[in-house]
Amino acid sequence: MRGLPLTNCLVVAASTPIGVDLRPDRSRLITRVGQLLEQGCDGVALFGTTGEGAAFSVEDRMETLSAVTAAGIDPQKIIVSVGALPVPDVVRLTRQATDQGVHGVLLMPPCAFRDGISEDGTFHFFKAVIDRTDRPQLNLYLYHFPGISGVPVTPNVIRRLDERYPGMIAGVKDSGGDPDYTEMLVRRFSHLSIFTGEETHVPDLLATGLRGTVCGLANVMPRLLRVMMDLPSAYDRRRLRQMILAGDVILSRRPFVPSAKAVVAASLEDPEWRRVSPPMSEIPVIERDRLVADYGRWDAGLPPACQSLGHETPPVSDNVVSIRHA
Image (tube, rainbow, N blue to C red; front, side):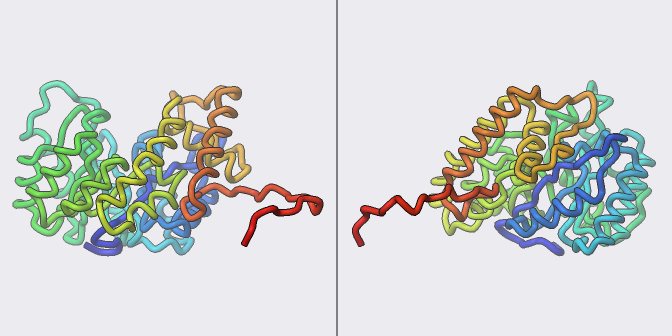
């Protein structure tokens, strides 16, 4: 379990800044990763669903990872999503990430073939990748996200892979949205690291042995999530769940990826951050401005230790006299 905390682990599924050429903007990404780590994230997941990874070529993803690690970001704080349709592409991405010394790679079944994919077929997909990667130091996280892939990562598949490749299956990221399923994985595979992609499930699941979360909301509320992760009990953590939900409701007015990027762009005063990969589109300007303003007010209303956006203190006139008593 290298590089990341064994408990209360907060990994941000990082948004990827994109240039006009629709390729990753490495400079902006490196700067943002550093900021998120400073704001309390234990690690960063690159090129997942929030990071629009499937929209980028293998070469762009490999070159970007090399640039991130060359910039001094500790590779042991990085999880790389290596999903792609052709197995040879997955293998190239997996080999490069593993050779770079990242904490782990994250892989979901490909989304092109949804009908009739059996557990045996899913097992053989992962087996083909592991065998062809041929790296004994491989640290593989299985990515359960049937809403995207159309194919679940079932307990039977996890068990078979764990038995065939002992020490290579690091754990599971569960983005299926069912906390009962996540808890079942935690209890059934207690020797593996189970992460949830659902931030609001964290308060209760940490108490069952969940390692932590790999989540998109950490792009825009890292400090609130950090405070929540560090509270000593499920009771204390539940008290912050409504705060998280309130922020998430604002972002959920539009698709999450452009919403999160709009908030990041506003907080950094950098409109280039708003760009998304087709077929996604930026939020229309009127809706975007309202969403950003509402999200800013929500963040400003949090306790200071939980605020992730920069807020200027309103100026106070010298003519104003305090009437508060000591």
